[in-house]
Image (cartoon, rainbow, N blue to C red; front, side, top):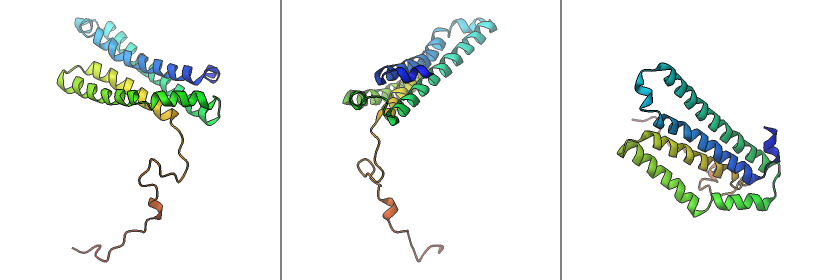
Length: 168
């Protein structure tokens, strides 16, 4: 996939989103073919299974490959910092955080309340894609930075010692 090196960061992120949509469409295929699959025609069942696996693996492969290209592109300074910052602002906005929370709620409701597990897995895959993309573009932390890590100084702590270890 050398063409990924020629794309902008926004195009690469959109391609990652497309991979997420493709993998989520695998569950849409199963939902649409639920009734026709129970006809007893095994060739239709095999074809639906192969289509499901192809869509799922193909979409996940495209999504993960483009996220890897984003990580490598950021590390190699392939894109200008202002373009990366614009995508970071979008993926770290309150709307993106709300979308991530909505994914969890919709997944739980669809799985356990309305028993629409196909929709639940579609939403789950799309939410995973969104979170992996947000992780791929987040700002790297400097070693020793305690900004986001509350246990950043754990190496400086003294070891635990007790005179009562081994006693009952």
